[in-house]
Amino acid sequence: MSGSHREAERLAAEWLSRRDGVEWSPSDQVELDAWLDESTAHAVAYIRLQAAWNRADRYQVLGAGFPRRHVPTPEQLSASPFFDEAGSDDDLAGQRVASSLLGELMAEGPPVGSASVQPKKTSRWQLRSLPRTSLAASIVFLALAMTFWYVKNSGTSYSTSVGGVVSIPLQDGSRMTLNTDSQVRLALTDKERGVVLVRGEAFFEIAKDPKRPFVVSAGGRRIVVVGTKFSVRRTEDDVRVAVTEGKVRMEDGSASSRASSTQTAGVAMEASEGVFVLEAGNVARAGGAGMLVQSKPLSELQETLSWRSGYLIFRDVDLAGAVTEFNRYNEKKILINDPAVAAIRLNGKFKADNFAAFVRLIEDGFPIEVTDYADRIVLTQRAAE
Amino acid sequence: MNDDVSNWFVREVLPHEDSLVRYLARICPNRSDVFDLRQEVYVRVFEAAKVSRPVPARPFLFTTAKHLVLDRIRRSRVVSIEPVGDPAALSIVVDEVSPERRLSSRQELKRLAAAFGALPPRCREVVWLRKVDEMSQADVANMLGISVRTVESQVQKGVRLLAQALFVDGAEARRASSSEKEATAANGSGAEDER
Image (cartoon, rainbow over all chains, first blue to last red; front, side):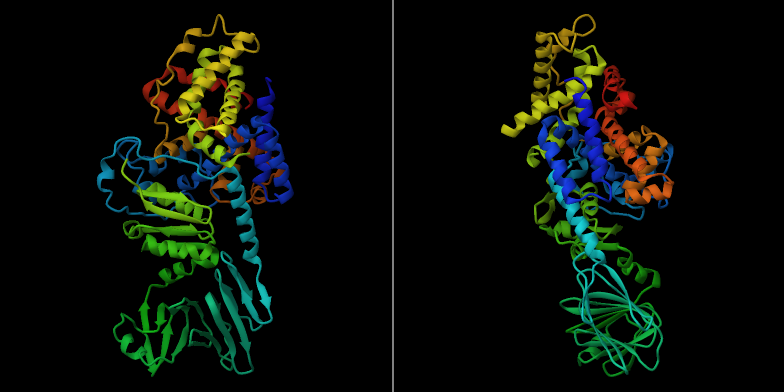
C-alpha cells in the first residue's frame, strides 16, 4: 500500500490542474469521474486537494489593494493592512474583513448587537460546494461564458442571455453594448437610425450624423440623439437613461411628466411639453408616474456603466438593491428572507458573473447565514451562537 | 463519488488534519508513514460515512486512526512501532485540542498568507494570477513567458503545497504563539516531502 496514496495524490493534482485549465471537456469529466469512482483513495486525495484549491480563491480578499496582475511577495501579503486591526483573531470576522475585497470595498456592517460580544467560535469557514456540484457550477459558468459572446442575430434583432454582455458595432460607425438578458431590434431607415430596446439595457456610442438622427425607443419613450454616448435601461416599471457624453433629447408622451419633473433635483432642460434635453451627467428615470432627472458626477455615471467591462460597482446601496443587480446576471437567484438583512448597506466592486465571491464576502462580512439550494441562494440573519 | 459525503468530509474531517497528523506522528515513529496512514484513515472514514455519517466526526476520526495503527502493529507490517514510537500515546485521549476547529475568516486568511510564503516563487505567481486575477492557465503562461504545461505543473505543485500548508501546517501559527512542541511532527508528512 505504501506509495499508492502518494501516487493517488500526484494523480489527483494532475486531474485538478487539468480541470483548472481551459481545455476541460465533458469527456474529460467522464474520465475524471471514472477515476474518482475507481477507489476511495483517489476520491479522498482529490477532495482534499480540491478543498485547498477552492480555498485559495480567497486570495482575492488578500489581493485587495494590490494592482492588477501584480504578484505580491509573501512579506507584502503578510503586511496587508488587513491584519493590522487591533483585537483578537476571533472577533466577529467582520466589517473590515469584508471591506477589503477587491480593493474597493468599504462595507459597513449593520449593528451587530449581541453578536459583537461573541467570544471565539463565531465565524467559521465551510466549503460548501460539493465536488460534483462545483464541477457542475464550472460547467454552467463555462456555458455562460460562451453565451457571453453568443449573440442571437435574428434578422435585425440582437439579444443576450442572462450573464451575457456583448458589444455590437453598427454599420454607421456607432456601437451598442448589450447588457445581460437584453434585446434590441434595429429599425433603420433613410431618415432615422432606429433601435427599439425590447428589454434589458444597452449602452450606445453614436457616430455623428445630423441628417440621420439615432433614435432609441423604449417603453413608449423615444431618445433622440445626434452624436453622443448614453445608456438606456428598460425595466418592468420604467425606462432609465444615463448620458455620459453630449446631449440627447428624451421625448415623453405621458402628460404627467411635467408635474413630476419639477419636483426633481434635476437640471434637465425642458424644451417643450413632454420633451426633455438630457446632458452629460444626467440620469433620467421615466416611469408611469412621470420622469425623474438627476445630475450626477460623470465618474459616478461611469461606475453604473461598469457592467460593460463585466463589473458591478455599488456605492452605499442596500443589500436588496445589490442582490437585484446580481440576479440580473445569474440564473441562480439570491433571495433575502429578512428585512434586516435586506437593509444592510455596502460598497464594492464585483465581477457580475462571480456571485459566489459576492456571497462568500457578505457571509464573511456580515452576520448572515447563507443557504445554498440547487436553484437559489437564501440569505437570512445568522443566529447568535 | 458521493457528493454529500464529500461535502461532509471537507467540512467536518479536513479541519482536524493538523491534529490527526500530530497524533499519527506521535504513535508512529516513521515520519514517512504518516502521510500514508493519514490517507488510509481518510479512506476508512470516508467509506464509513457513505453508510452513516459519524456525528461528531472528530472522535470517530481518531478512533479510526488508532485502530488502523493497532492493526498495523498486530500484523507487524509497514509500521514498526517499538523503540521510537510511543505506544502509550495510543491510549491518550486525543481531544487535547479544542474540538472547535472552525477558523474565523481572519484566521483562515492568516493561514492563506502563511501558505503563500510556503510556495516557491514561480508557483506563487501562477497561483496568484490564476486565483486573484482569474486569468486562464493559458493567459498566465503567456504573461510569464512559460509553457502551459509548466503552468499546469505549477498548479499541481501549488495545490499540494497549499493543502499541506492549510491543513497541516496551520498548527504552525498556534505553535508560534503557544509553543506547542508537537506541531513540528506535522512537518514530516505530505507533499512537503516531495518539494
